[in-house]
Length: 272
Ligand code: KIV
Image: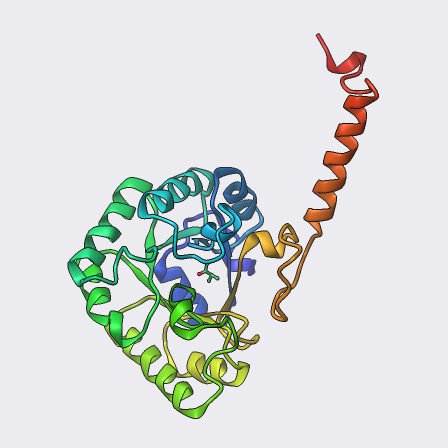
């Protein structure tokens, strides 16, 4: 956390804009529940994303598609109760905004009203610009998401690096510009070449937050369960694990089971 951002005031879209302007990197992590949000907020993350990756890490689905609007609101409201400082952004889940702009607006209003979060995020380029404008008209800040967009996984067929070809790279640059003009306050750029991400970040005045997009974006985001090493089977190149909680938690469970079996837990000090 940069010195001037150590105060406890809530991070807003304005703070993020100032951070970009003064070259202070933005740190963003996902959270889906109260306890995790409390830890991540206390650790100093500027933004907490209630990502639809909850579909994977919380519910065990293969993709982000199954999670519902109601489930996202449940996760988001728990996160809101846990975080004092971080700005809380909630993913609009698959099927809650693609139909038309009215649907996008009503899903966003439902999230804001029922969870108490501060902004929504949606995936896509020029195809979602009208929806972004409509949501913004209601006073709801919107974060964009370009590059690898997991809600369209069946269209692309793989989670490989995006925009490696010139045509796709140019389309990505254009989409990022269109999202900025539409009024998004930041863009997540997922799994694209680092040089391209730098080019996009340099060309926009809003923050670009990367995941698998190199270190010259204006900030970084990771799925907290990956970053804590709870999801040991998922190892993309961009992931840095700060802990190995899968092993540590598994060993703790194992020790607990042994203690119970041996009659060693609870001991005389752990009873009434
Ligand atoms: O759902 C999510 O966790 C995300 C991040 C990977 C950016 O969208």
